[in-house]
Image (tube, rainbow, N blue to C red):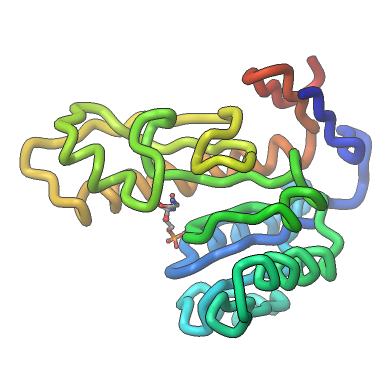
Length: 216
Ligand code: GAR
């Protein structure tokens, strides 16, 4: 697959529009929002969408003056209609890049068809190790000594897309899932902010499994 983001170039004066999908705390989204206050960041959050009305990150987004929407699976008769509604809601913000930041649902065909190649996800493990909903717990249970976080371009699989960026975090002997996840998130926020900013400013290409950010 070759996929060059057609929009960004270093000469662009305006910033790229992001839609951020969240399910919970939204601390990564908040870090992007903070970074985007600096115009040279090159991206701004046009909208935040959650799959749960009680996602705490929604309040952070509203307080920052960002438009929000909730598209909850339980409000739809099946996954396909939820996926259609989610894709329409994402499209309503005309994003250049969609960022799944703690979004705990798998995107379906409607979202992938419309935004495929322009959706990134951040995962709290060094993919392809420990994919899925419990990346931190699974790394601990697997006896990993080093884990971390990974930004991927989303494909139809579960955390199987091409890797954009990774950062490593040591596992400590006395780590709990919470303590390890907190240290991962400290590193992850910076990784996501840096990676999304570079993608927005410099564009990217995907050749097979290899993602290159910036002019190849
Ligand atoms: C992050 O660690 C992210 O990698 C993880 O949820 C956390 C969200 O934190 N996502 C997944 O586990 C997806 N499989 P936040 O809500 O504070 O930004």
